[in-house]
Amino acid sequence: MQNVKKYNNKRMTKKLALISLTLLTTGITGVFAQTSNSIGSNFVTTAVPFLRISPDARSGAMGDAGIAITPDANAQYWNVGKIPFAEKNYGVSVTLTPWLKDLVPDIYLAYLAGYGKFGKDNVNAVSASMRYFSLGNINYTDAQGQSLGTGMPREYSFDLGYSRRLSEYLSAGVSFRYIHSAIAAGVNYAKNGGQGEYSPGNAGAADIGVYYSKTKELDGFKSNTFSFGAVASNLGSKISYNSTRRDFIPMNLGLGVAYSSKFDEYNRITFALDLNKLLVPAIAKTTGGGDTTVSVVSGIFKSFSTGDQLRQITASIGAEYWYQDMISFRAGYFYEDKTNGDRQYITCGLGVKYNVFQLNASYLIPSGTGITRNPLSNTLRFSLIFEIDKIEKAKDDKEEEPENKQ
Image 1 (cartoon, helix red, strand yellow):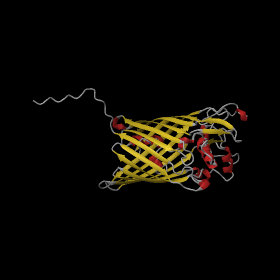
Image 2 (cartoon, helix red, strand yellow):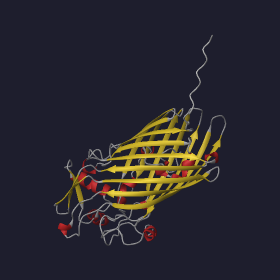
Image 3 (cartoon, rainbow, N blue to C red):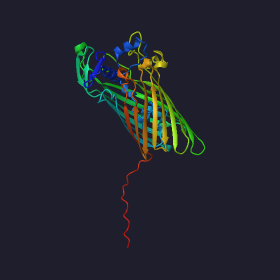
Image 4 (cartoon, rainbow, N blue to C red):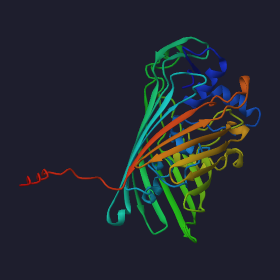
């Protein structure tokens, strides 16, 4: 997509909004890459970066930490391997996230996920999810500002997973994903020396996750729980929008730990830490671009040899406090090195649980001013979770009416 260097929302007037939208939707930013590498960037670019946007308000309030915390219906995104440890046997979650709301009014991410446990002692689980990312109405232009047409870019994915509890403390799972990306469908680049129109891109991928959790019961209602999770996500094919280039999708390796302490009948607190690294080669400082010609397997190995490895790791730190398992307060911090994107922000949120329903909300606290203002400032997420232990079967026979008293 070298002719589509940037595209402009018809409602946007600020240059900052244009740059931010380009980086967060195409993942193919040659001009930015060359500028960044002049200052020693470790920037890693991919297509379909919407796959790495957290669709969960609970973890969104904890600095995007979710790999090892207690599982719910959104575990399909964070770590499919931990679903057999879910408290309930069935669960469904719906999340809506307005994206870049400070800059653009019509971009959003919608997410639907669910799971069900089965088999003896419910050690098996199946899960599924769907995410839909809409970028609103876009006017496309080339590097010279010439119009390439208009459109309504959108991306979506479907997941199907299976997981199993392997022992009292250990479980593992795998999920398969179909990805469709139509961010520039119908755009004609032949006028600029190209060979036709951009077409939607399609790709397939898989997640593999493991989860370990052990609880130590103490006196009375007290207990301590230690959990660990590891997940390799979006392992799959490259994606292409034309006949000349194929780009990596955001393959990722994540490690997470969580510690939870219940110190009486009513109070429980959890601390979590996630570390993530993209399994994609960093931008080469000599060429100003990522190596998209190597195979997927070679790219994974090369991701550990290009750029400064420590600077390519992002960290999410979060805390969650529950009172009587009815109301929770959460806070977190996300850190990314300044040479690898420089996303750094503080989050907060709360959750309310009543019977089988749970409502979660998160808020990304504004930071920076002017052109240094974080474009994700004021991001809100809302999740509604419904979880039950048993699905009641419909009764075929009507209940007999009581006899009339004489």
